[in-house]
Image 1 (cartoon, rainbow over the protein chains, first blue to last red):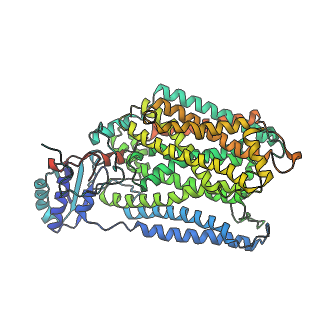
Image 2: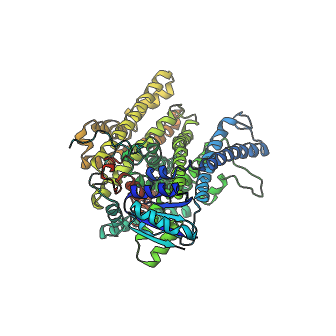
Image 3: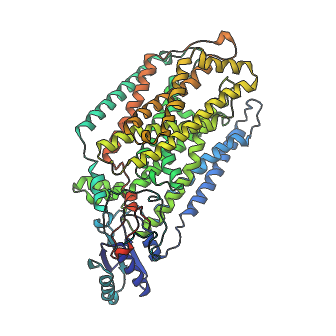
Length: 166
Length: 471
């Protein structure tokens, strides 16, 4: 993976660089920011994260399993308690609800990990420890012939440091 | 030049959750946030002393439990028919303590209450350790604690399954779910902060450990995009969970045909009480932390003022529930129920009931005064009385009902033994041991969310976001 890494002190400068690079049809751009900023989201124009699909599927499976385990166990060992029906859906809603939350919550985390590609076991190309502290980074992947133009774009946008990464 | 009423039009105005309605005027830039918050992680002599005391209490409780396991449950102060005592009181008390953490971290997150930002990490950690503590008590209460796993439905050679209509099995599912989701919510929020600590760390071994704990987080836009969405959904799941867990705990009582317990008011009454007691514990923890960690410009008086209003509100709900209990008993026309509630406040257990009423209903009314809401000494004292009052609330629910049931020959008394008291003290040692270890290993103030409030550097000066962090 080769590209250009720009380090920015100002947020709006980083956003300008991203917008200009997108206009120049550089498609593989990554930004690094110490905190989530809406300005960067707007500059990228990404759609909403699909992590909610994991939540929905996990929650549905969890609720189904919660009801199923209570009904199956009660049917397997049909002990009448207090004259209540063997398959009493009202108390079993507690299991359906709790397992919906449990499996749905854990699926959400799994979805986030899968989509964000973490855990990462190796150092990422383009990352710099400064990006967790106060500075913003923009890394643009591009073929050899476009690297010089990208460097120039980043400098014009206000990058304090620009370097080629491969 | 006159101040602008609104930022320039070219600024997208979408106040995010961390920054809504809150200002930290003494926090100026990201470097200051990193330096000051990571600076709280250096161990001090006072911290070692407190940790040693907590460990001592914990060891005393653990030794007493070992003694009880060896010599039997008869060493606890049970006196038939009062077969629920300090352990069940502590179970309900500690589960309740945990609830404020989820309220502050999840429910206030969804409501975009900005004052949660600097206190939620403490409250979340408190939740996890309080639920860990609570989970021990039903096991301690068992005569044969090594058989506790029989409550979990697992395939076994005898083909036996738990009774799914029993509130005790409901508890197992509710508490385990609550512990898992609370711990997950806490850890997910910590990942970006651990990455910040990793990048500042110079010791190669600690750096390696932090690198593993942060899962290689690198603050990329893609990571943040999925992280913020996942965090939102976890908060959305935690919100009904916090309401359900103490409702399920209240069913332990409400499902029984015991005077004072068999009431439909119990679930909301328990949930409000849990949140109220948890806010009391948040004050007990956060007020010393802001003083001794030098974080008064992060946890400002405005934060405490806003949290005090929440405390006052929940106190009034709890007070309303107390009054309604008496009304329901009177209106029911049931002589046993009426006799029980008379006995509660003017009979055998009058002193416990009045501790509860004074600490939970009357003293918190002082928070109508703004001066007292902003007086940290008063808030700290009040938080201790709330903790005391809420422990006695559970005492008043458990003991007077069992000691004053339907038939006069059943009426008896209850006195906790030294074993009960030691395990109670040990539970505080266990809770504070974990909490003290936490606050010196991981940041008690969320670094990345504070950075959302602090305006970032901008090249165009007119584009500097307005105080309050609109961006």
